[in-house]
Length: 121
Image (cartoon, rainbow, N blue to C red; front, side, top):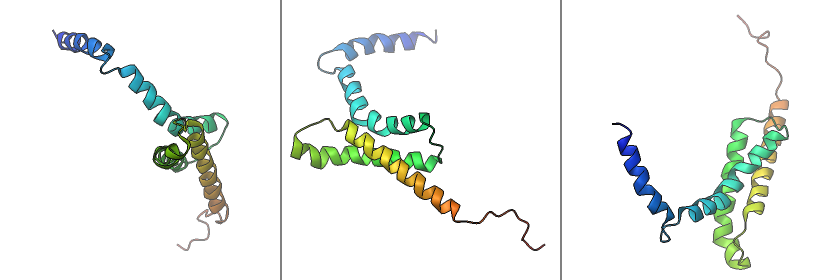
């Protein structure tokens, strides 16, 4: 009895997804090209290549990738007339991640290690 609502929703969703007025596959492909690749692929590739970094580094890169996508659509698309900003936005994401990672590790290197031995009791 609990599977009946799921079956009804699925039966109603299939014609909606395949109708020509609302073609969902095109929208998913557009989302994948416009947002997923520039935001997620660069952190994934850098992690596979062995970049060990803090979570804030990945988040900074992802935010930069998303902002690069928005900037591409707002300013560069009208100038160049090309809608394919996937690779440049992904490069921006990766470069921001590398810069934040490098700056973060340098700021940590400058500090002396605190082992707690010099603290008064």
